Amino acid sequence: MRPRRTRPAEHALATVVGTACVLLAATACSAGGGQDSTSDAAGAASTATYSAAEIASATGTYKVKPLFAVPKTLPKKYRLAFLNPGLSYPYFATWADGMKAAAKFYGVDLDQADLNFKYDTQLDQYKQLAVKLPDVVGSQPMNDATYNQARQDKAKLVLIDGSFKDVPHFGVDDKQVGTLSIDTMTAAAKAKLAGPWKGRKVLVAGLTSANCEPCDARVKAAFAQAGSALGIPAANMTMLTPQGQDPTTSAGTTFNDFLTAHPDDAVLVVSYGDEPVIGSVNAAKAANRDGDILAVSNGGDSAARLALRDPSNAGVLVAAVDYQPYAEGWNWVEAAIATAMGKPFETFRVDRVLTAANVDQFYPGDSKR
Image (cartoon, rainbow, N blue to C red; front, side, top):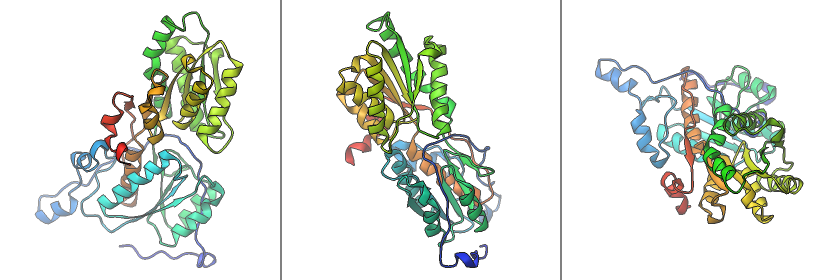
């Protein structure tokens, strides 16, 4: 066990800081794994790791795929700290659920802060967690102040859905999921183009978030695929940036204005997440324009799953690309343990799409909440 860290005098009674942004970016770290077992019994006991089958079993219908084979006996009981962007947002709340479950399973301590989307408070929130001297601290993208303070505190860092300087990170591949959103609706769109939308102008509306490069990247990838797979010209593609803190409400208002400006056109709706798409679908239904749109959301959080189960969304909300936020949260704990041990970890891949037909199969526990 390494010695207890000391903080600078000026921080003796305070605590440390950081700022995080809300949604996204995806990059991944190099492949990793557990330790090799040795031939003697004592060595085998100390280097035994949890297998992928054990993790799949432990996580039930979530079927988490581990990013790092965690040793069954850790070098020490690590303390982890995570700065959650906002627990009121279903996707981030599910991150927290996955993290808590993984921390309990692997036997590590976990402290989480809720920024409530007030990013200017992240330094204060970090200070409150830092008094417990975490071995590893996590967040989405951070600023120089957070990075420098954590380094000064001798804490290691791991980001999820974000990147910063030399910090290890993992998360959703923006281009992959943006492309997948269009691939998922291509069959339905072609059926519309051959039927009720035949001869109509078809637009692609991509809802993004202000100052969010990963959000933009997902939408741009969807635009590129819409051109390739459906032959929609770039001139018919519009990126919309709703203003406001609530992504569902603000997107609904923005998309309603867009529909009003295009009364005779059909629209394919994509976004970086779930809530903006759900807001758009709600706006279209309220305007009696639901026959004019097809939508696929990104994320697969509880709001998207509820919307897929809503019969009034049939034929409008085609699917939700499932980022498996519970798995991302669980995987962050694995990545944090790997980082604490000085080990690499594997990449995170998105390969599941939720529909009204399969959502209960993948998330049977939703009805019990």
